[in-house]
Length: 239
Image (tube, rainbow, N blue to C red):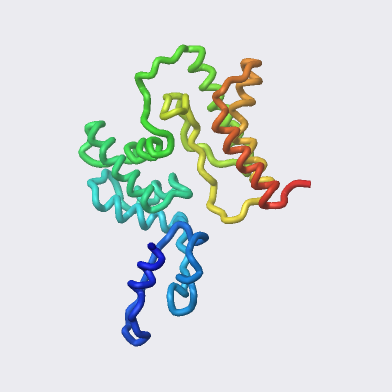
């Protein structure tokens, strides 16, 4: 029905009418070939997630709509650096969250610390400052997160450590914020292996320190497995 409706709406335009029809989709693979033949949607423009320059430009647009404490260009650059792989909609959401956090913190203007908290909230969920946690569990989480951080600092291919916290957020007991040192479209086998090492650093720290393992690394294993599976099945990086 949708296909027929689109074709009906497109029907009747002559080549000299000077009318161009645009459409957007996230699922090109499911489009009917009838839509893609010559004379219909015959020119395809792929719009990927923005790079750091794109994110900075998008950040400027949304930050200009709120009161900010600091230079617009400087804050936009910092927000762009904190959000690799984020879309324009994600950045809009972060700026809105930062404005709400600023009000809660009693700030008259949005500060950098509010933007950082907003990125954390979008990434991991609400902060649970009142969460009841034993000293033993806090210590275990601290060593786990420190394990990630050490790998990030020691390995050239691992992501750069930006922040470590053991305050629970969402389903995580704590987390280490790590971002790529520089954006790249291609990764070497060594860089991917070091990314896996960075993800598994928390589990190793638990084993070395406490001679015991916990369920705290389940999300790390999920991410590491995704990279490893892609290396084997998509990138041909196995023997």
